Length: 182
Length: 394
Image (cartoon, rainbow over all chains, first blue to last red):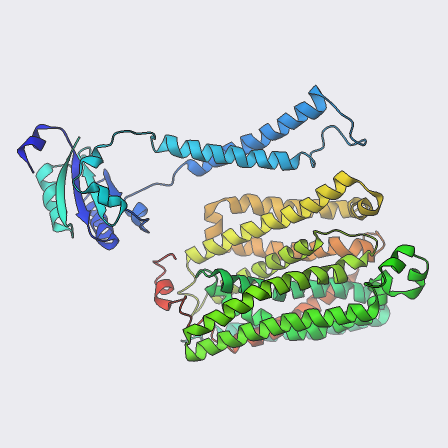
């Protein structure tokens, strides 16, 4: 591209597509060509794209489960501590530790724990909050939230070669190919 | 659409079921001669078990028409076949009317004469009104089923996309009608076995159990039908995943309803309510209650938490078979302690009669399943190409 951009560190090379099929096709070709550090940007979920990009199963469900189990234990612990240890009240001769009566609160705490773990875990795993990301240097990138699809092969890719990647992306159905500064 | 591949299987199952039904039916008749009361008690439980599959299919189909989505299309014809057995089930209800005195204490004049509570309840709990209500329930269910199936068949023939509207409108009102009739049917047929006891969540328990029973049956049927065309190319892993998620939801909903009732009655601890649970948690009934808690809820719940389990037909079918067996024992746990005066007995008729009814019902079901195309032909919301490839999701 311009001379100025070559002075700066390169984040990657991005290609813009008019529809999801073109993006999916390009992503598939890029993976077949051996590129591994690449990311796609799309205004809508594209079915199958995650698998094509080589995405792995996330650990988030395990985190949710863990949060839920901790919430359940916490909810029961709270009630047992309150009604059997710290301030025992005899309610119509029922046992102090009534597991059945404790269940609604235990259940609610399970949901709370699972929900919080999912929310915080999702943010942490996506490295949010992230105020700056180089991909926003791509020309026309604001259209990625409307009707444009982007694929970026990043400079961190072991196979990355500026000219080869440019040529490769130009041969896909890209409408434009541009270099993205760090 | 070529559907010849599945027909021999369906006809084979139907033929064998008929022989099982006839064989066990003869045994059941002998049992009826020997011990009519035990026969009627077994009949009520077995009848409600098979009725649940037809009524669960009815409510699921109506939800499908109202809510849309392509995921239920693969079991739409199996559901419609179950709905078409409702007139037969209405006829099979007659023995319950004959055996009322062995099932419902409020229908015996001598018991009512000694019991102020039953006298108070007699404007509702009396034999003529009970029969009239049963007629109304079946009239509502059969009418709903008749039109839902008829318009669906018309759409197959004509491909008229406008038929979706009457199907949706009827289903919307039909869901309300089903909830009302099923609630009162559960009070009449199940709850009034112990006419002193009452629980307002009993209707939802009845309905959720029907949805769950129907889904288990349909999952098994689907796995068998998906071995050959036309379903083989349509029933993908995604469809099992959808149905697996739904099974998961219903297993939880069943536990939620059962636990809600227990928690409220346990907390209240009032003599007229708690006796019902004391009868069901004493002696050997406790073991059955524990088995239901563990295997009707906890084990399926933990297994279905996993995404993989929801996608594998082999795992889902095993769960469905187990749950279906436990559906019977859940009904047994709900009804038999009152029918058997709190004593834990599993009479031989308790097993023979449900099998006999099941054989006859399955034979009728197979006949109804085989005379229509197994897949919806012309529904605008189910374009064959989106589902055929198995590549697209929605």
